[in-house]
Length: 239
Ligand code: BT5
View: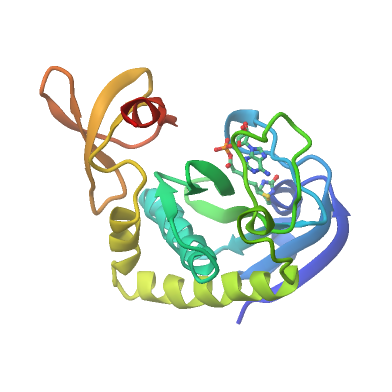
């Protein structure tokens, strides 16, 4: 069972868990109404408000270090499924963005505390729910469930849906059921498209079982990429 711990305000649910994971059990979920210093990858800002979901899931025991990429994709599939119940045209941009019509509705970040093994894995999830606009210069890049549907959603209900689906999918993952990978493949925003990743123009062939992206370079060479920033600019150009 997952236990929810609810705060009014935190700088960041992920940072809070990184600092306090020793005080919490495996499968604790930290949520807050107002996150003041949410972050994404590479120190980037994550805009959050009382109209959005900010949550972090703590996983503690026995997490092999080489499973982080797959858990990251698994979480994308979990969030994808919850949002897809409310909206069509939801896509996953490998590894961790959930998009609607190329606008980002959710971002996910995995952070870990590692000594000689993964002591704690912290899975941060931000989902835009009822925002009517964005403060940062995000209007062209971000969207929310409200902006897409004109419906206001109950935030706590969606948090519970995410946790319930995470619990089910994580158990399937532990049981070696790889359905999350098929979701990431079938609903990928980038497979069979040209993208730029780590400053290289490539064509995306597939996502392989270890979570890596399989790409073809302009020289025809086929190789795997395990980490990087995907730019969709070539997809826009093709339209
Ligand atoms: C992410 O990073 O997309 C991961 C975001 C994770 C946020 C959650 S909230 C709970 C937990 N606590 C935290 O402090 N973080 C996690 P990245 O791929 O680096 O994307 C960041 C970029 O997304 C920014 O540079 C903006 O361009 C854009 N962005 C910022 N806020 C956004 C928002 N609310 N909606 C859509 N895009 C946003």
